[in-house]
Length: 498
Ligand SMILES: [Zn+2]
Image (spheres, rainbow, N blue to C red):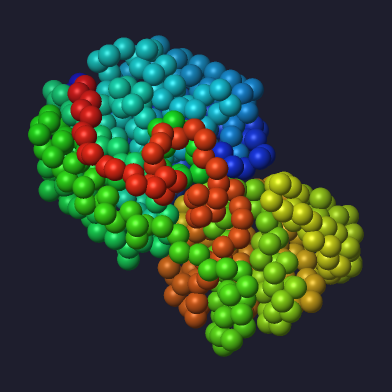
């Protein structure tokens, strides 16, 4: 290995729901240019983990550009044009200085108007710039959609192994170690891909406790024992309706095609019969409310249909309406995105009483505003840090409204709500309430499940409903379980050799 090989580092991450009517734009992205990317040093992010390994192993990071957006609707054509141009210009500028490898940190569930494989496009253009001999290694979320075009550009990949995700940094570190090997050794890696025509959801995907986790542990074992350079099972974001949306097994070896192929086929065959278990088990709103009323301890109502981290709008008020109409008497805590209501609260000031339409602001096809007369309890700038990754959150002007037995945190911007950060940042402790609405399919166990008496997966409409048949996919390949009946799976491994 030549001294201090130079590794071009780039990042472009977003996860979209095709069923969110609000398009994302360029302004949805937080951009870090050059040395600004070092802000992720020490953080639990893919880039943070990769940078640490580069330092330990004597690889010199050549920082180009990082673009990260919260989840949302399809990226607009103009937004994608500006974003992709900026990212590729930054990559081109750094590549011209001479590089020995590329690390591209991706999510994998992007989608843009006119480009339904944005990651594939970025990688193909990067490959054109750096030529065929420079190794490109990527990291991906297990909710990403790896495409054929992506696989034809890359020499290695590391995929998250945990859900709820906690292994951001270690995934970046694994990608960096793969890159280190590819730069140091003469290898011709092989990647095997097996596409499974199934979309999955539900509690069995929790890797600590669910059957998906048992398969992921097999993938991890292959990595730890050295049989595979990397192995993972990508389930895709079922709401990202793109041509190659699917579940897929990816196994990469340092050159052994038979091992890559056989292990990928084995894991895919093991997953297929489990697809029935890997579906959301939803409870009607009426039944959830009735049962919650008879439970003494705290409960959560999981509103996965309006999961902002999966790409929904966050303005669903259906659970609030249901609880109000049913006269649920105990203390309720909820969050909602509604810029006009937040603005009205900021104008009125703390202590004022306002009458506003709450919710139904962004996805009017599914939700309509509910009129409430509420007291403005607290106002904030909406800034916080995620509990897991310690990266910043920005909800814009934020208000805590109180009416009857309800406390609702109202945000101006759609943002990820898969932990308790925004409750804490606005002076609220979920443990002080009897019923908490959580707009995320799952959270880390200690956040809620460890101390509530029940977690109701409530069946309400939304852009990220686990009732996948309700969404109306039009683009992904068919037949696809559970969108179609009688889907047959004939496992085939496609081999990609560098
Ligand atoms: Zn994910």
